[in-house]
Structure formats: C-alpha cells, structure tokens
Length: 68
Image (cartoon, rainbow, N blue to C red; front, side):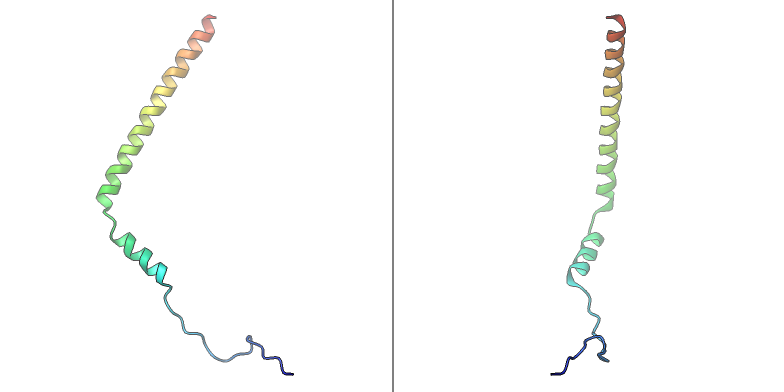
C-alpha cells in the first residue's frame, strides 16, 4: 500500500476570494458615515451627562456622610 502525502503535492491551490469578506467590504462601503458620526457624538454626550450626574450625587453622598 502506498501513502500519498499532500505536502509533497506540486499542484498550487487556486486562491479564491472568500465570499463573506467581500460582503463585509461592500457593507462597510455602504455605511452612512455622517450618520455614524452624529450618533457617536450623541452617545458620548450622554455618557458625559451620566458621569457628571453620578459625580454630583457621589459628592452629595460624601457631604452627607461627613455630617453623620
């Protein structure tokens, strides 16, 4: 019985594009980047508001604990 090794093969495999990659590239090209930028700004603004309110409430809690 003869063992045929695939490592010794002289044939070159054909390089083909992987279809999901081309779909992903097409999806990224179709994104409305102005809308993404606007949504990111709103999200960062909301995070800033939450951080500011949380900081203020923590300060109030610290002041109250200091008096107790």
